[in-house]
Image (tube, rainbow, N blue to C red; front, side, top):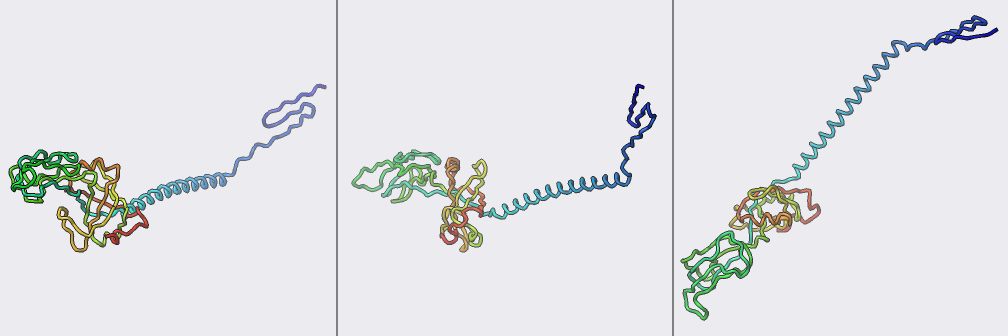
Length: 261
């Protein structure tokens, strides 16, 4: 006898015995367990969102803290004046300035003729002389105009070396105690494309007449422009005023500025 079998997804029929084999279907999870799984998933998602928010807030808070600390480390030193050591050209004897051959803010080489003068008294040398620049520099001012008399030793023309300009700012002693030699200071003001970097070079006990008069509890801080800024600074005119802030996190361990005066 030929035997055959037919199989479906639920039962098996055997022609020889007509026996029915029932296959159980997979049981569905209880409703209560499914609901509990969804609740756990919601809790996990909520926790993840909270964790992300806390992380972002922490990063933003850290940035704010760093910014505030940086602001505290930047000390406003006050208003600085661009200064330059004057170089004078004059006559050892009284003389009449016959002609001035230069103008203010003109660059001259060492030995350049600045003016012609005529001595008022007879001497061993010629009465008419040429006044020459003692060094290379930029003319700051004409002290004695043509046709006027210059006294013996009086400057007739004043110039300065643009490579040796510096910023000077009068700082109260209480604030100066936070400064050290070699600290970085940032200068902003007229003629500058942005802030430039300078170095706290020295402290002077005296205040020049060309700067803002300071009190007895102030010393003068001299800031030297960094090499990268010198090309810009040399185009400026001495006497201009600038804002200065000092980064007190720099030059750690160096000599206190107040002790160097």
